[in-house]
Image (cartoon, rainbow, N blue to C red; front, side, top):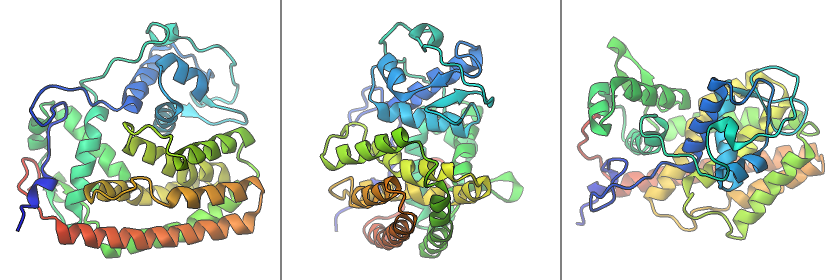
Length: 344
């Protein structure tokens, strides 16, 4: 029998198969860090309106990594929404329509942001993948010190990795302050999807009519580009993240009920687990039929057909639940747990 264990082996960030140093820092992570520094330094003033298009031009990127960066900063509380296009710096409600320039971000116009080697963001994707692919086999402890040594970083960065994974819902702090992987089995998938099927249609119904038309149009255009095969192949999972989050996080945020949004954060782990299982199984096409399903829902939102949009979303979640169960079974039957430097 062929050795299947190598599929779960953790590889160090920044090395290719031959061990040569390469930079794999995702574009969205670098953009997030640059914007965060601009906000914290005051280069981007309180109330400044940030738009995807102008920022993409400054960073020399597509809109997708900029969109993901803005979403992350909004989750951190550094940006906020208002009744208009874009996101506000800070939490005020008075927008300042000023031109955002490269000078505000301490970079030359048109230059891409330099990769950050100290931030946890550049390491998180690999760590998240290994946690999720191991979680399908049960509960394992994460050794924080070994994790820091594995990535050759300090304990603070290792702890930041674990804290973010905790927010996503894939690790938890247990007895004796040890970090543990939360098992991701059929029962948990079922329970989390049941929660989504109860809450997401209700949140979407409340959001319809409140989503700015230009925001919705951009989401539809993004899906149509994906269906035409125009997404950036190098972006891979980052593109998948954005396409998933535009409906399941972006649209629902306009519903006006923060308690529903907060409750749904508990289910975020199944949004990210699907992509990792799909990549590990080497499924083609990478972007599956969810884009067509999302597009139908978005078009119903555009028509303000509340009943149809809610029904299509419920059907989409049911289908996603069935796909998730199938992927989980397929992965568990074709892969095995391997020794790790930081899982116990």
